[in-house]
Image 1: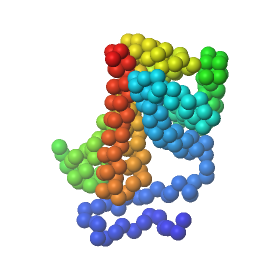
Image 2: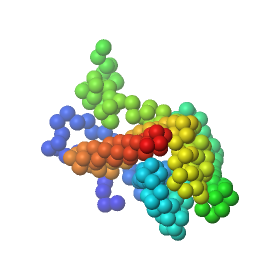
Image 3: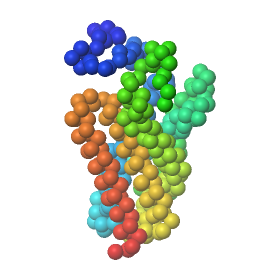
Image 4: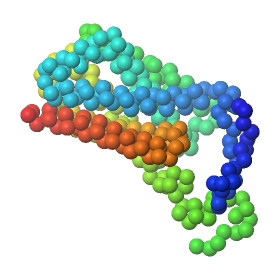
Length: 145
Length: 136
């Protein structure tokens, strides 16, 4: 790490600052499931953020006309397009379940070791299962788009 | 307001000004925390109908898609979903920016760009749905 904690405060910036204790950096801790899901939650959130561009493009194309809409369909029908939409589906559903887990914690439940592990595994497996379910339905309904 | 006891002053890590403002490290209190949860519950409730709507559109051409997207109930559900999710992602991205960008000017620029992006995406999507709904 090359750094000692707590760090010495910079005297030049200190006027009325109180020296607060600093927590050790992430790298100090043993890797856990809840840590991994915390990072995945943030990563999927950021992915969904930029994924809204695809949603907006699709809606604008539908409002623009047949040519613009055909372009979107050509993209979502391509291998790369399908991969992105598949990834978007998983990011959305994982973020949903992982987020519901956070709401449970916000209400003060699920903090026991067994409970938080169960909630985290549930979000991870549930997200993948729901994604597959949606895509199976999509292929059944659309006949492979 | 009575002055805090000497014992409390020793243990508290807050500055006197911070204690008076009572807004915490975010400078804005807990309004974003509450709105993040409000919009989370809203999107969680709306996600099932939105997924069904998207599935309904698979394999249809523009005319078919436009007809479905312009139906009042579907348009309303989509607009609600867009507002809730755009608001949610605006707050979420701001948290990410504040966590990782420590240069004050760059942070302000990023927060501003984040606001512009979220408003633009939401407005463009809502405009498209309203255009489909009015059939123009």
